[in-house]
Amino acid sequence: MYSTGQVVYSKSGRDKAMPFIVVRVEEDYVYLADGKLRRLDKPKKKKKIHVQLSYDVISDIKEKLDKDMYLEDADLRKALKPYRH
Image (cartoon, rainbow, N blue to C red; front, side, top):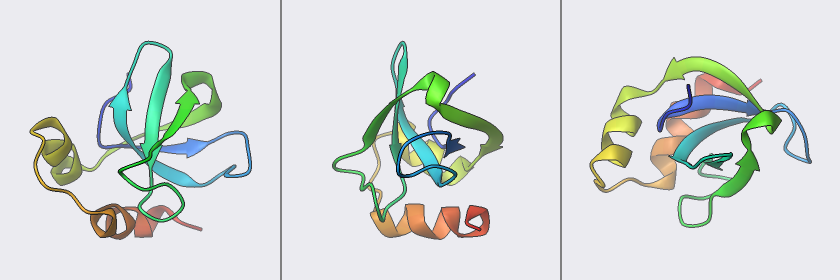
């Protein structure tokens, strides 16, 4: 259901309706980053019920996260650009 590299939207909080990328998945929580408000070194921990799923997975981001490859915040910002309103 949730996977790394997946684009999600926040449903609550001050970041409501903003797109994020899932950087880590735990049992009831997902860790989100967008490279701007939330950086990779300090992702936002949110309950799964507080995020709106999108079925878009950014494959190159997912691959880098899964293989622990080098990834910059600029990569996230660039990947999320089409999702911002």
